Length: 325
Ligand code: G3P
Ligand code: CA
Image (cartoon, rainbow, N blue to C red; front, side, top):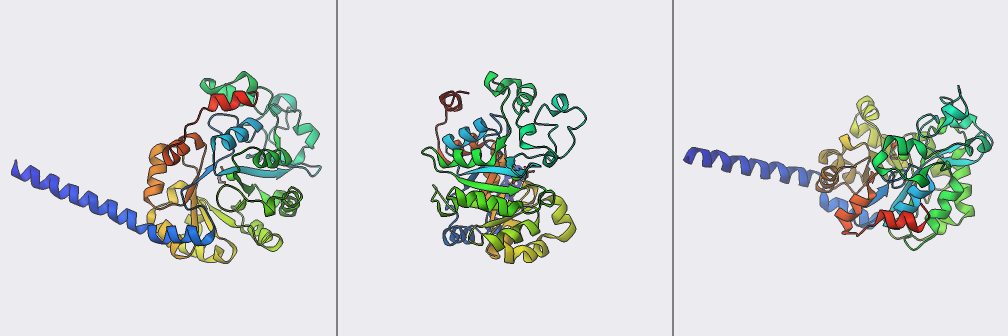
């Protein structure tokens, strides 16, 4: 019995030691100071990944209205360009997964969205796939939603009481040469480069592509830039060389969740870089991020994140209904 007590005691002490080590490795002190000095949010930043995309079809009007009105700090969007030069929000290269392109444009559904005109894209239903994939979250009003135009996204973010910032990714930018200029021009036209939002910078640029970030730095140096980091990028270059190389270009990194280990996060903090991990959808992942001193995260579950970190009371159905969905 005595032996068992000793073993349990040793295990508890060892576990506490590991927890403390994980906590301190993320450099919580550096994180707080960095957040304050850099103008990023002092609290955990909650970024609605493709809108409130657990509850509504990703990158559509209701997904963004919902994320905005529930109080997400940032609305995230993947920006691409149509063949006639309009900016749209769409994650995948092709239209196959999130629209009915297979029916409307048979044989073209695997083509890049950039091969389609705006008029063609706006004939597509970007909502019914969600109802089929997630029947429990389906809504009649999601049928026949349109792919969102960037101008609509900007308008949603600017309207209402909530005042979220916008977190803009250039998706496959090599397919859309000059898209950075188009984005900056649209932001200037709508006054986004001078706007004040609830917390942190009003606009943040993000990309997996350093060339795209370099271009943003040239044309809108005042807007913070985030290098997204996939497992493949880390495996090819290694964490420290990757950060050192990108450091002159960026204020923050966006590592995939598997890379947000506190020693990685701590290293980024020591280099003066904010850390926003993607894409954390479970409660335990969000808590772990907090324990590791991660500064914010992209999530499809902005509702759950806001309940956890802000004690928010959210009635998603009421928000959707208010906007006619
Ligand atoms: O932008 C953060 C995260 O969205 C990157 O991954 O593939 O969802 O755009 P992805
Ligand atoms: Ca993205």
